[in-house]
Amino acid sequence: MRKPSKNQIMHLYETEILEALDQQHQHVFTEEDIHEILKKNREDWKLPLSTTTGDLLLFLYKRKHLRDMDIDFPQRTYTRYIRNHFDMLELACSLAKDSYISHYTAAFYHDLTDNIVKTIYVNKEQSKKKDSNTFLQQHAIDQAFQKEMRSSQNVAIVDERKIYLLNGKHTGKLGVQTKDTFQVTNMERTLIDIAVRPNYAGGVQEVLNIYRHARGSVSANKLYAYVKKLNFSYPYHQSIGFLLERAGYKESALRLFEKVPQEFDFYLAHNMDNVSYSSRWKLYYPDYL
Image 1 (tube, helix red, strand yellow):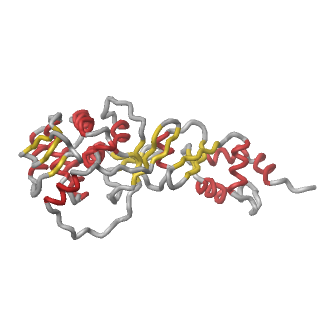
Image 2: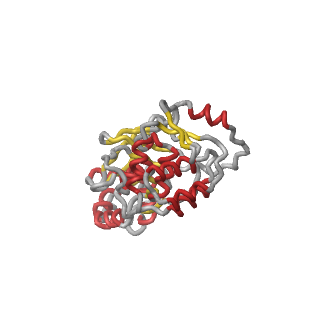
Image 3: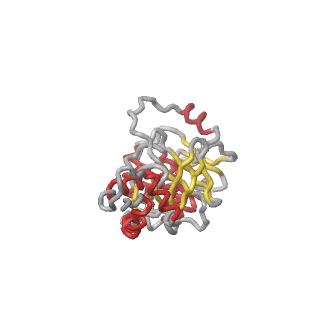
């Protein structure tokens, strides 16, 4: 009697294979995920050592248990394997290990904007770098903020939605929450991120609106502690203090940020026209705010 083929064996163990997929509690898989499932269960499923990850993927694809999806970025194409209905945020976070939803997408997730945000910002942190010995100078700040803010071009379009894969500052995933199938910055971390990169949150007017929506839901002490821990080169505490003031936060919250030294004039955004100046925060901002 001939031995059953790999495909016949997979048919025999189809229920067990699907159970193994379900036990992962995810709907988006990488090739590595499928490889690990095969490696863990090969013996129980009586599959020969010659069975490859590709064999299992082909079986699941033909049986319509998985479908493949290519996500095309300028420098790289990612292939993901989708099971049943999936969340776009889960898909985005599958693109890089330990990545998380951030900026405008996180604000939308936390219900901090009235806008329908279809763009997805997902952040993969850089590796930790040595502290810079560069000292800030006013003329260097002025020069940097007279230019347009740099924006990532690492973007893919999936189902008519843009996914930006960012490569942000190393923070040790400060203020990042784990949800069912993805990770996302909490409210306090989100407010910091959008103050630093308002172009990833609809611009400074929308950033201010988000701060207003967050009033009463965020901890000023936690926000301040995060800013101290992040230890930015630029004095973003001045931007955040200004936004808190304009958004109507309590004076006690403002004083937390006001006690940090203000050694330089700073800017709420890059390349602004028609600016006003806040002497309290030593900050230039668009006069329409």
